[in-house]
Length: 170
Ligand SMILES: C[S@@+](CC[C@H](N)C(=O)[O-])C[C@H]1O[C@@H](n2cnc3c(N)ncnc32)[C@H](O)[C@@H]1O
Image 1: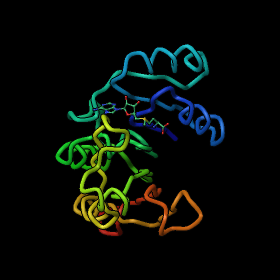
Image 2: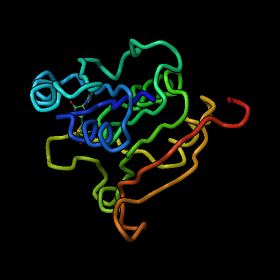
Image 3: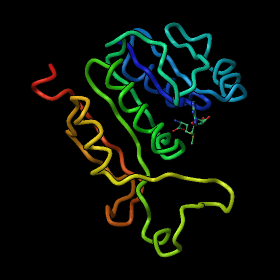
Image 4: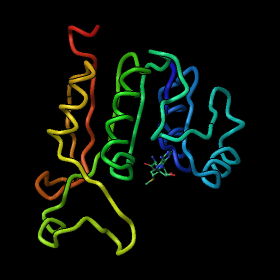
């Protein structure tokens, strides 16, 4: 089984999941060279685990169905809406079995403020679950589980979504 961690940052999750589930090969990709250097320094020596510089807003340089499981944790809302759509289509193209995305929904307080600036300088592009679900469905992937990361779902703008190929796409 092969794992892709799209937007791996410092590679901590890539490493944890690689070890926990015993993936044959796990690849973390990101476009931040400094992050990749840390990931490579900390985990690059672990058998089967590697990291590469890839821009998630482009066509991903992998063949169809290359990975069994793909992750995009805490990534989508950092991309422009068109790039989010591209990444979802690309993940569906290169993944065989399971895709896990962690999304940030527009928080009620941000809506009241009328903007999405979280810290005054960092621009976010949050998405509703329904939109993300629709984009996956268009690519033949259905939503099978939703997990808010905070206990009270209504107060949890951050949600994990798990997708699998729909019956007609198997
Ligand atoms: C908030 S961090 C999340 C890191 C990791 N997935 C986690 O959950 O800890 C967002 C990551 O997305 C990466 N990123 C943002 N836009 C990207 C792009 N267009 N291509 C590749 N990586 C990107 C950043 O470099 C950063 O490492």
